[in-house]
Amino acid sequence: MKQNLTPREITSRLDEDIIGQGEAKKKVAIAMRNRFRRMMLDDDLRDEVIPKNILMIGPTGVGKTEIARRMARLTGAPFTKVEATKFTEVGYVGRDVESMVRDLVEASVKLVKDEKMKLVKDEAEDRANERLTALLAPGFKKEKATTNPFEALMNQQGQEETEEVTPEVKDRRRSLRAKLMNGYLEDEEVTIEVEEEQNAMGMMMPGMEESGMQDMFKQFMPKKKHKRTMPVKKAREYLSREEAEKIIDTDNVNDEAINLAQTMGIIFIDEMDKIAKGGQSSGDVSREGVQRDILPIVEGSRVQTKYGAIDTEHILFIGAGAFHVSKPSDLIPELQGRFPIRVELDKLTDKDFEKILKEPKRSLIKQYEALLLTEDVTISFTDEALAALAKIAHQVNTDTDDIGARRLHTILETLLEELLFEASNMQGAHVEITEQYVSSKLSHIQKDRNLSRFIL
Image (cartoon, rainbow, N blue to C red):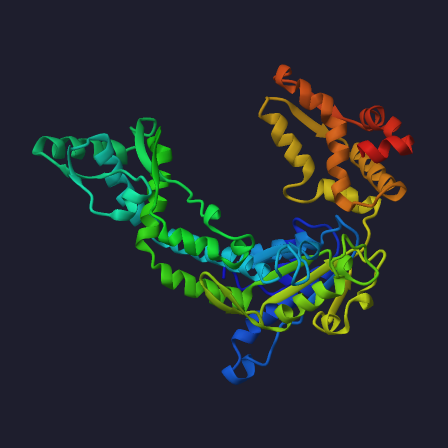
């Protein structure tokens, strides 16, 4: 785990990027802290304490996914997001519900592997530099016939090479190594072998990729490589990662990843309202059937993955949905009982929109300022302009479809469209976005309700 943060610290950090929704932040922070508390209990009691899953209720764009995703990032917990509507009842063609657990394990493996690779970074980079030196000053190649029948079957290179290093080559390598370590050869080009992604799909039946069979086939297929020419700086990155993977213990990584996913993993299930009785359905697939297939995963079951079996009993599930047409009570009772904590997120007001534009560290305004600065064009927004933008966003959401904070993306893109188009020819210019500028660019769209449906 990255940090053992208190609930107050988690909510404070979330406040830096997400405006409002204090109740939702508080509940997810408590749920996360309870997981740390559980790990400190005696073994016999620890197994009895299960996560209190959360159901977030609110329109799109108010921060449901972002709260869960950023909390996971802050605490270093494995996280995956799925849409309930992507799953189908057993017996139909579609994703099976266990795939959400496999996705979580993949995320966990990546987290653990990246952490392990950081620990061996120096050793891996040293090995990569040795290989780069050998590539820049190659020895004399000798070939011998290979005896590997699999390589012959897959049309791999039919010869294995050995290298003879003379004293002259050794001297040259010592000289190059010194230059390499001092950064003098970063732009020098070298040719390295890069592994190709093996495609086992042609050997598989439909649906086998969901069960992890695709990866099992890949393990038995020979590694195929192709040559790529690139600068030393980029080649070092490839080779360092390759060397790091050789150093770390893969079995240990997999075991740690399974344990991390079991104890700290978070699965975010969006569009829960679409599989409730009152929700909108697509096709003839039973919504209740999908709920009953999800139920055992949320209750706790063992799922087989390519890294080993994982128990889902202590994974934290966060469900979410707008619940405009349906209600949480339209879910089957068994599934309702597995999401005991409910939180309703507030609709965004014009004041919320104004704060979203001003306060976050990586707000949309700061993003556009940075983008235009790459063309040596600076922009600034007056407080009146930001207030006008917030008011327009709130009004369009009220008059048309409420898509929450995502409305700001379309409004700002429309507002700055001409400037973004011409910026390449405006080096050194400064543009101040005033309330009048906003009005001139957006007032006609704001007034025309039909037009705003298509543009905003």
